[in-house]
Length: 362
Image (cartoon, rainbow, N blue to C red):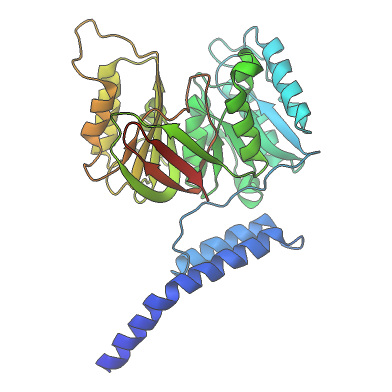
């Protein structure tokens, strides 16, 4: 009996990779089949995860866009004051990609800090989630306010028929929330990103288009002298540090174990960034990580009393010593804001200064 158990265990171990390939093949066949709904794909994936066959933690990938598709442009957070001309540019850009754009009914509402009341913003987002003709939801801007409507929304239709949710900064709240539904999303430019002249943000625009239309996404960037070198493979998650910290203790808090974490920030003091990083550390965010990708640390404020160290040091202090860390990745609140898939597997090579570091999605 002992020998039988031993050889059975060996058989399971060596057959697992083949089972994984078979699951990936079946998922590809399902998504490509015109007779199989995305709901069936989601249910099949979850079923096989429970069976212990599906070891890859890649989230369900919404259908990529194609010419003729319609996307919604909504404002789930901050007010769009005097931004109509910029939104017109965003619509024109989407049209140039062959997409139709449906503006949220309350897009230009003004509710003090917010783009209308919580109920109005939720109404626009809900309509976009539920409308089968809408293939992606493009957020007009961040600011603050997404968290106020997360729990006002019904995601039942969205779970059955996933679609891309696009944005960054405050939209991290949505990225985190839907990642816990096992659905991928896109950290990329927003409508108001067109406040910059298109010729000055060409990489930002092109990477967003490539990601939405399912083109290959890979980047080579110069390496920071502060990089902690190494390689990693895993699913990318994360977003704005302040929003990640604000999700702690809620149903939107991420499970980062075995994943690659992306972080970025804007307009904070170093002590505030340190406080948020320490909070994330105490919550276990950095335990079991495969790697960390650090985006823009933009417009960091100066303390009245000198802090005494660089942002890079704050980050390296909280990340375990054996975890690779890539600094200065062009994503966040700078003009160069490259698109990143959250919930999708990627490969990362963090090189030393003078060499190129690489990030490639599978």
